[in-house]
Picture 1 (cartoon, rainbow, N blue to C red):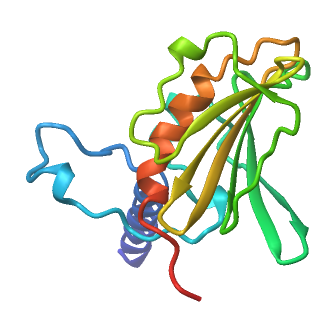
Picture 2 (cartoon, rainbow, N blue to C red):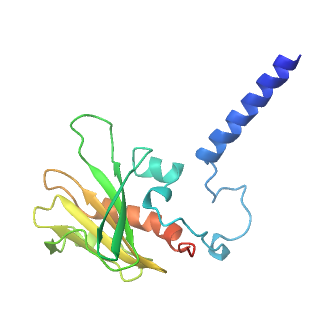
Length: 184
């Protein structure tokens, strides 16, 4: 009998771990109560790799683990996290990067208005702008957060970055970043 109890305990612990890592109930269903407009966003860690959840991974076809990175120029530090987008194949080089800093920054130096700018919606993003690079294989969507600046960089080799996917990703991330980072 102790073996059965131990097996049951291990199974329950594994289920709880999976439920925490992959929250299938992301809200908005018939089982929720209250208004989401009255819920304040929780503070986030300031690490761009910490903002995704199961729904964002699925909705944006991201790989489940982002690659942390960043750069520093004096006291100005930009933290980044980059995910592959789409099928995990050798020839797929599509990526989505989230960058965050307490100071303003740009990821694309040779900025221009994207071709499909009429289809890029930046509703709800404070001081938001979208820019493509000259080759149109990258698009940056940047905006102001309560305690810093954020940008999404959509990279599509072959000159097909439209800013539409990047703006959707930015809008989905904005509520998480609106919680601000905890004081250190």
